[in-house]
Length: 102
Length: 102
DNA sequence: CAGCTATATAACTACAAGAGCATATTAATG
DNA sequence: CATTAATATGCTCTTGTAGTTATATAGCTG
Image 1: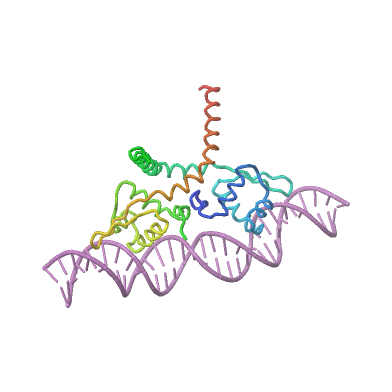
Image 2 (image 1 turned 60 degrees about the horizontal axis):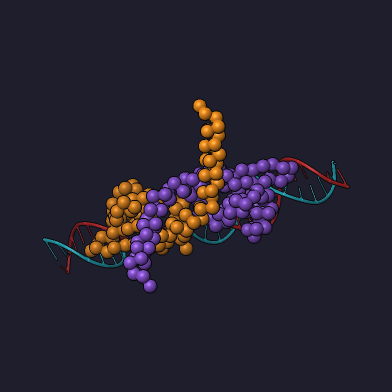
């Protein structure tokens, strides 16, 4: 099954999420933006659906895809303990720059 | 080439990073912890090396692997604009709970 | 209801991933 | 210098991924 982590591994899927961040989109529009075939996009969207990262709103033949960012929290949570590391190093850099002006 | 995103797609690699977060480890220890063959672990470590997520310290035949978390910043940065979404929804939930006590 | 539009699914291709086993490499040690 | 220890690399197998084209499905519209 697709997890948030595996979904993010593909650049096209990240791009789709980025596009949905501003507003809902129909499949054809996404295909244009990505420069991908419509079926190609539909497959990515299926994976995004299965991972719970997008929702679909039916409107005649059109399918409006919208962002559902909650599953990304899993990634954010996993990342949390690592943030301390690079902020520590940035702190160290700051201290160094303070102690060694110019 | 392996990016931080593709590295994180595999649970074993995430587990390796989690183990390295506390301290350096040699390959054999990682293999034990993951319940994976030594060559299997070495291959994951190679990918982690190529993505710049770990460093190696040679000590006779032993290789001490250490965490190098900087490339994770890319993931964190990508995630940043999404954080607003779920904190917004949490805020909405908070407001709801405040306005509807019990 | 014929034809058009929008999307999904199927079938196929090419290639990469993850795992295992066997083997090569490198360093220490008797 | 033969042996042992620790790790890396190669080969093979199976499975999954990302993309394509062709086709099916569903809903308008004249």
